Image (cartoon, rainbow, N blue to C red):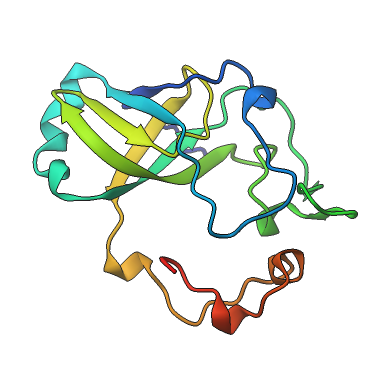
Length: 160
């Protein structure tokens, strides 16, 4: 079975290449990337943005369009050993689909000005969903990441 996606828009970002996206020296779970950019939806999808201005944050699904590799293991930042790709956010995955949460700053017709951009210029947008209370899970387990940030899963909850 094959599934095909048609982009609904593109990302406008200050980053031109994947290596331009900054990586802090150490992992900070409370760090919010303030990098601003724009999500430009193609005109035929503008009507789908009706009522989006009431949300503070959006989930953006996108294609890692510059990823030409597929790996089943990845070497995450701050790690001295590889992990299974499904336990990471690596772009080199079987279906090259990315997801991020951005803060919605404003809307101008088919353009969403956002903060928290971690994609490169021209990244194809596959879908946008509002970030809601159901996305703020409590009592999550952080797997191997808990040891990286030196906390327990009980103390780390989204939105803290």
